[in-house]
Length: 199
View 1: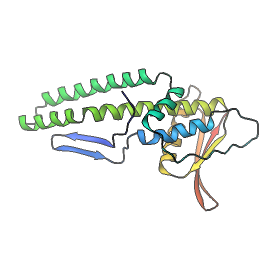
View 2: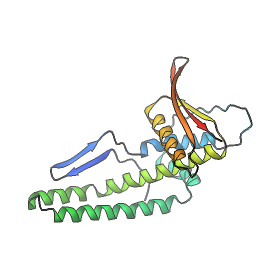
View 3: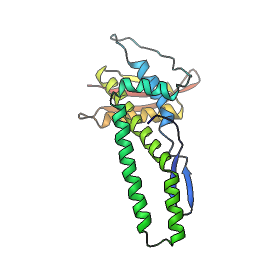
């Protein structure tokens, strides 16, 4: 098993396979999460502001895996568990298709073929999603434990998505942590700031 991009969420039916471009593969966000983890994982001194120029260089799948393994030591077990879960889900969908009383035999066969055709795609998307949320939780833990007050990033969709996910992770903590996400302009650039209200 590995990390690699597959694509947006597939919608599988007896008429074909479509893709929901609004549900992107979480793999596209992993590079940003890793960059933020690397930027924030160091010692801090009171009242000092730290700047980090996020590299535009994209990490390879192998480099991403190596970096993520530092934050999610159980990455291999997570991937295997997710693979197992998706295999069960696919089996369930195949069983439902076979038992479908609405579709004729030809349409049923088309649906089964489409499910089988997308098997590896579905498994990989699910693995990517699982690893993404492990990395997001690691980033949230880092913000909480190091009492980091805020992160400012460029106002790009991918950065905003990652910061929004971190907000969700902090909210799910045993003792939920309040956050706010603000968009503002500085020196002609749009920026997004995640404020963490540590107590």
